Image (cartoon, rainbow, N blue to C red; front, side):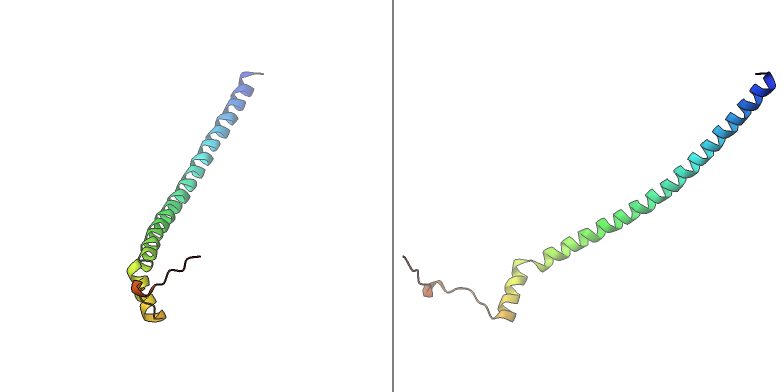
Length: 88
């Protein structure tokens, strides 16, 4: 191979390498932008999850359940004087 052929091959290889670097950099930027969007979505979902857990704990408090049992179902506390134990 003469020097002109070698120079042409090396020039082509440098150009291919440069295009590979540009393509890789572009892909990296696209993926980083997508990662940023997904992280924001994750953070928003974490906030929503915390809010839902707080709401669930509020709905399930003992006092609230007891209040609903009294108002809607007419339930009341047991009068232990009237409890009869049955033994086999």
